[in-house]
Amino acid sequence: MRPHIRGWPIDGSHALAAAVLCWAGFALTAGLVLTGRTASFDEAGLRLWWFGPDVVSRGPAWLVEGIRDLTAMGGVLLRHLFALGALAALLFLKLRREALILAGTVIGGWLANSLVKLSVGRERPAIVPHLTEAGGNSFPSGHSFNSAVVYIAIALAFAAMSSRRPVRWTIVGGGLVLTWAISISRVWLGVHFPSDVIAGWLSGAGWAFLAALLLDRPAREAAKRLAEADSEHIAVE
Image 1 (tube, rainbow, N blue to C red):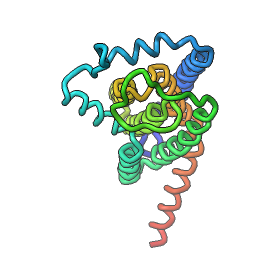
Image 2: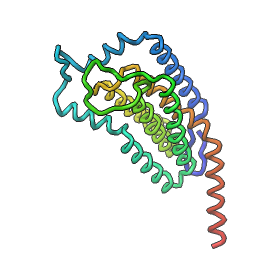
Image 3: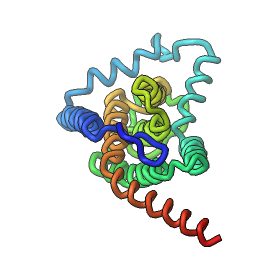
Image 4: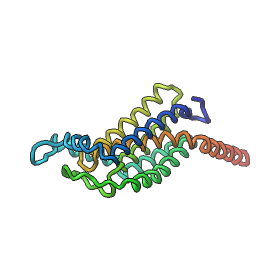
């Protein structure tokens, strides 16, 4: 990875490979859902977190509350607050290229998720009780998609601060683990089938990596122009 101003951009071939793998996984999952081949898997996955004829949630009350807190990180308010905080931090650190890519990834992800959700229109599961409010279509999980987009994009942006590959991989890996945990919480709370969150997470992660590749050049050029404008302004003063 080569430095630009203060950041080390993600390797384009790595981003492309990750995006292709994620989108291929999403296409496979969508195909299985549309042909009705995930029914038994989805039911087993939902019932994994429940037991007994009365369908009671597994685990103590504090654990269920913790799962709600985890899923809240993927909600509209918190994920947008995290995204805005990350943008502010990146701009403060003068990592403008990374800030522009993060903003473009989040905005583009919202549009992509809306289109995918409209194309399938699956109803939410009614096998187990819902332990949190959820509206709209079930497939793919918008919660999982948007969480993956925002937090993986944030991880990619801050990973660019280090020239050391192990550090960058650790940061991005942390983003992947966090977003997968948020996705699983949707199944635990009974508001999504497992295939919903798998498809949502794969498509969201795929978009985050693809956007990092597609937006790199325009963001780099825009950051360069902003840096030149700052230099000219300082020279005039």
